Image (cartoon, rainbow, N blue to C red; front, side, top):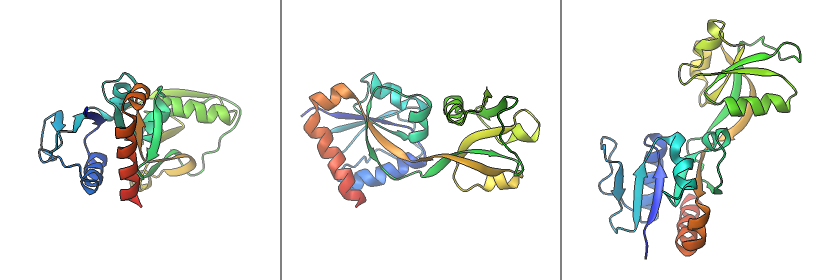
Amino acid sequence: MTQLTIAMGKGRTADRAMKLFEQVGIRFSDYHDKSRKLVIYDDDNKVKLIFVKAVDVPTYVENGAADIGIVGKDTIMEDPVDVYELMDLGIGKCIVAVAGFPEKEFTNGAPLTVASKYPTIAKDYFNGQGIRVETIKLNGSIELAPLIGLADVIVDIVETGTTLKENGLVVLEKIADVSARVIVNKASYATKTSQIQQFIGDLKAALE
């Protein structure tokens, strides 16, 4: 039987995914959060796990470097790729939201300036509302943008809302619910159908 290759980023989502893997009998004895290994194998040598930047997971899966990927829905929305999205793992739950000062209102007048590491999601959302936007791509400290006048609002991941609150910002509109999803390479699904279906079925059973 050929190996399944799974791609995912390190961090809390990976830690939770590892616990799920253990529940379905897939154990990675070499895994620990301090390890710098980029490739590890399960104890039965049936699954190869590769660690990549979370934003790159869909690219690895689409191009066949991995059969399966575990990645946040926000990443899939921001940079859509040609893969199957087969399962919501329900881990890493948060929302993608528009945030800003409490009194901020959206109008169809002057373009809205939006700071975000998700410019595609931001544009798609506001275009759907009929609101013109100019986006500024930022990769960190997004909450700073409205505070210094760089942007009118931000589009970002919100989990607890603590950082927003501490900076005088609030969620103005929710765009989407986000959690970790299982994506699959289309060619792999055709050639490793039974293995992938078994893997998905085991995960679903573990979550029930």
